[in-house]
Length: 122
Image (cartoon, rainbow, N blue to C red; front, side):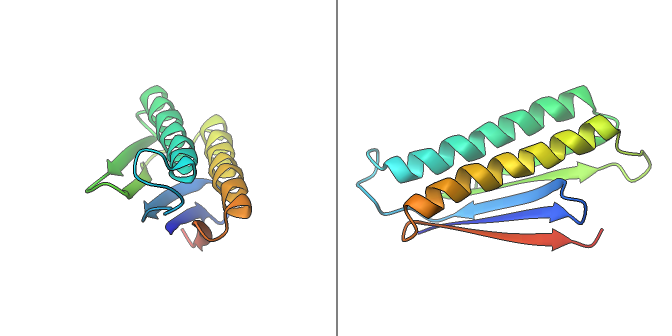
């Protein structure tokens, strides 16, 4: 099973996502469930990277893919800078993108994908 944990700020802005495991729907290289989750998460990383390139003074991204079937990515907010409203809105949209994308795969293949969420206090 693929387990995805999405963590957002209290206002709904993306902060962190962690995914681990394998869907087990089909053999390696042929698993459409794994592919679907991978596309959603890699697209989110791409969007976050682009956002961070545009707003280097406010946010940066850290990604880790220690092994096949494991992906973690987070936004680091520069506490000395106010997050511009545009960045905050985009972080909310990226959280929605992950939630909707992974959530729809989870609804269709509930034995293969589990989406959990947490809210961070800071």
